[in-house]
Length: 352
Ligand SMILES: [Zn+2]
Image (cartoon, rainbow, N blue to C red; front, side):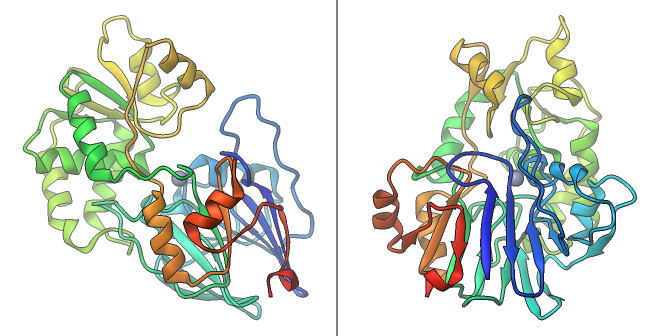
């Protein structure tokens, strides 16, 4: 068996990983560009299946370059974000399904609504995280079964500041009128939920984010924390209609270029500060360096402590830190106490 990390190793890049067994060729995620000028990853031929972890562009937007008839395995929520006409095979957020002779286990990833991690019962267990977070108040994270090889979201590198500390910093930023560009299925609803818990009601969600809130309030597909249902229903009922004058405006898209976030930022009468809380593309980073926008990380990827807990849960021996620069493999090895994968081609015999 071979694993090829086509895209996503050594830098924050779209996710695309090819798993080739004697009988099947399976693509894990099919990410789209994070930067406008980014060259697309080479599409492998003869694919039997594509497994999609969650509905963010850097995990699904590369699908447009794949043939229409390939079976796409993803949750019902993720399927909503796909263009029509795709050969979608719905999978449970928390459960199992078969791909030929491979048993695939899924669990909620704690990062996005309808988002999952994958565990394949090949080569002593192969775990692919997609994007994960163990610190979400809104999304549950299911502990995965043991796996020898782990390909894991390490978007924050060796950063290790817990969410409660970031929350304190965020409160300071939010004392002034603020626009947060956000992905609707991710931190929009979580930020609204936590603000509501603190008694702050002067919040506006744009149509895309509000639609997600309403769907989440109506149905827990397995990816939400069990205790938030009543709070989400209350929030959906009591949240005022959208107003650009609200103290905290949560709006798509996460780059702050398109969608309501882009529209508002283009308006001359809109004076809220723009606060990025997630990945900033080059343009956003330039604006941040120039002092035109603010940045305060809201943890939606694992801290080092979370990665250490995950490694212990998986009992993995081989670990690929995905979506991050790997400056020092030795440092990673010491931090996680397992072999660090730095070569995008993984022959599983070598992992014995
Ligand atoms: Zn994501």
